[in-house]
Length: 264
Image (cartoon, rainbow, N blue to C red; front, side, top):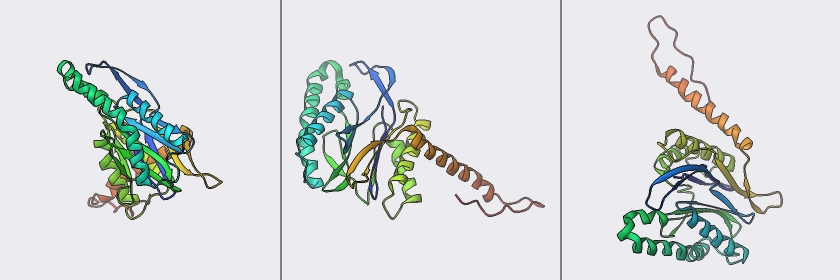
């Protein structure tokens, strides 16, 4: 059970995930949850996160690492790179689908749990930050100004509406800054953790892709202390919303009308 959130920003990308992995048997029986890191660096310039089988995610990670270190993505446009990465990912996914079909008479649909996955990348291409998702068929999709956020995993039904709400409120007609993207990612993950019936949990992990002092794109994992202040901003915003109800209530006879609503 997983939630991965990616947001395309003006000057970079934010990629975040919850920190719980659910272990189980090959027959689909859940056994235990453990803390894991789901977002991994590729070199120092890209990041990858996969929802689904851990082993398949490890293979995708190694495939992307090979493409990056051998320079096969160097100078490629986003769409050229998407096709190259898809070709590198698909053989790993295809083997799992074939195996699931072979074992179906014994395991039924449980075998598909080892094949169904989705992957998200934050990667610089042609000197531009890119956010790309690959579905269970390894078909790619590039985040754009029209669709700047992506959510993957079992928490996606909770995350998509919440991210759409945050976008409408805070950055409806533009891409967010990276700091805004971090705030939205933390808020979305915390909301999902609080409301998900199980499987999505702490600790939160956040990575950013943005330019360093030399103008080169680098991936950096944020320490918890760095995005903890966003947690305080979230608490402040929720407090303002909670108090706003009082300003919507009509004053009873003899009571003073409340002052104007507070600003956020």
